Length: 327
Ligand code: PMP
Figure 1 (cartoon, rainbow, N blue to C red):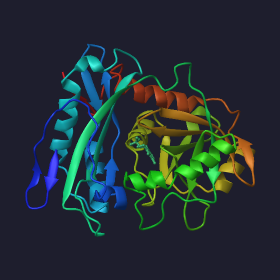
Figure 2 (figure 1 turned 180 degrees about the vertical axis):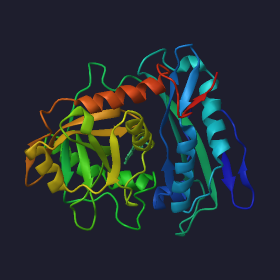
Figure 3 (figure 1 turned 60 degrees about the vertical axis):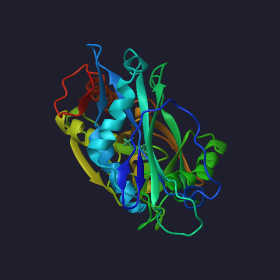
Figure 4 (figure 1 turned 90 degrees about the vertical axis):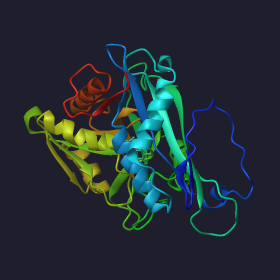
């Protein structure tokens, strides 16, 4: 779907996957007006297909567009575009279980010119790819690297938008994590380098309390420099449904380290569309390294993971009205 200043959205079409031709002076190549989304279509037990919370992705896409000075795509148009791509061949959605069809809606400037200003022409597209189960051999905890040198986003920046530039800023830190033998980066706040923000492509949750009855679950509050994850938001509600005490708050690196040392912090996990929920098994930084509890997937982590996946795959009732059926 195209957007042109003075004309709005026009020329929606469904076409075979093919390369795009780009002018060397395309404004996106120089000034990075590019935003995207990620969501999944799951096969349901009766053979039909449904996407998970596409309205939430559509609204976040609008928020990203506002921050980048781009036009807002109407929520209904965003959902209709995703629906059209999936329903043109539902056989594309894997048959069962945790497998899914991953959808990638995105938008970028198509105007040609070297002036620095919001562009007057954009293209919105959706592509898709089948996605296997993230942990085919069973859930495996990830190791994380606390990035103290680099920050992903700062107050007033684009951190709360799903914009390409945030990921460009993260690549060297991800390479640093790999050099230190870690799977993922954990970002800290830009000012004090003390408060936990999020992981490379996932939000984080911290589980406190020893007895099952008193578990308290905390996720870093939305500061404006971390992505408001849709999985994060869904888990705030599912954790409440399961009777846990849930809060959004501030968690420092020291809280994390001390909580693991004194046993009050029993589990840490990351959540996002791709992996749904991933336990965090160990942490490293330039100054310290520690194991999260016993380094194995925790009970609350696995319970929340099952509860969310059961809704997505249709194994349990969709009590929140999150599934968008496509027939
Ligand atoms: N943070 C970042 C930086 C991400 O890229 C993602 C993936 N979209 C998330 C968090 C998790 O968001 P969601 O649950 O909407 O996939």
